[in-house]
Length: 153
Ligand SMILES: [Zn+2]
Ligand SMILES: [Zn+2]
Image (cartoon, rainbow, N blue to C red):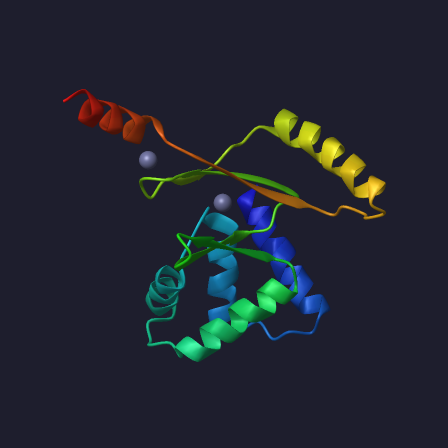
C-alpha cells in the first residue's frame, strides 16, 4: 500500500517535470513510509541514503515544493517542533497536553461520518470541502494516571 504511495508521488513529480534527484526520492520515500517525521530525521535519512552530507536549505526548499504540491502536511507541536506527514483526505490526530503523545485515530467510519458532516457545514457557507485535518486535545491514559497519583498523595 505504502509502496503504491511512493509510486504515485514519483508520477506526480514526473508529470510536473520536476527532476527526480536522489534527495527528492529519499524525501518521497520518507513521506510514503513514515507516519511522522521531523526535518532533522529527514536530513539524517537523506545522508544515510545518499552517503553524503546534505544541503539543509535544499531540503527546506524541497519540503516547500511538496507542501505546495499538496503531498505533505506540516503539523506544529507545542508551537515549536514541526512534524511532516503524507496528506490524507481525512486526518484525525490525538494530542496530549502533558506529554509528547501525538497520534492518529485510524477509523474510516468515523472519518466518513465527519467528512459528510463537514461537507454539510461547508455547503452551508458556500464552501467546497476537499479534505480535513482535526486535532483532538486532552490527556492520554499515562498522564491521567500520573496526575491522579500526584493528586492522591
Ligand atoms: Zn500524555
Ligand atoms: Zn499524523
